[in-house]
Length: 189
Image (tube, rainbow, N blue to C red; front, side):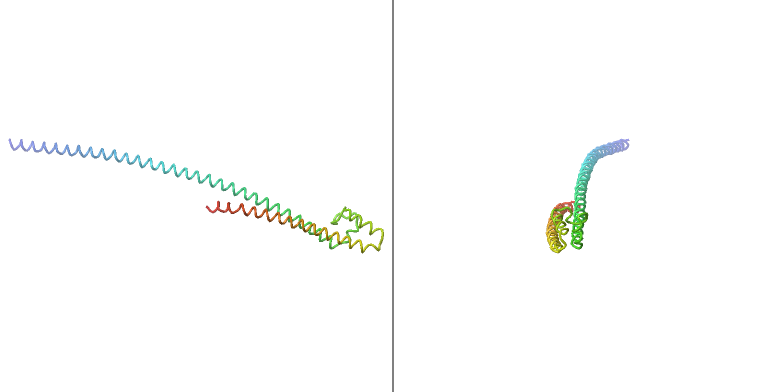
């Protein structure tokens, strides 16, 4: 019996040791589980922060892009306006140039008081020239020379006006070019 009692005591002792080991293992697993949950919560928190920062970055980038688009649209509108003005001024210049060339190529128009296309239409000097021409056939050469002189004077005035218009256009173009580099740097990012 003693062997059975010793054997039972040994079994009981081993079972108690096994239970203690299981209990310690369970406690260790519980602690590991708590640590794991804690780490998981930290990871989730970090993910949410990163996601929030990324979302904030996305929103900021969208706002920046929208601002860049507005600036680009403004610059394009200014450029279109400038091109339109340049086109109108060029057309005006071309019409003046053609009118001047027509007047220089057709001096007979100076004789017609009803001429609607003559460059000196309804001017004081035209009236004087017409009256001189009508008064004497001999003064025709003098009147035409005087008319040519006046046309030359008018041509110089028109050419000066054209130079001024071109200067204004160049200044506007420089101003537009000055604005453009900042927008090109905006588009390059």
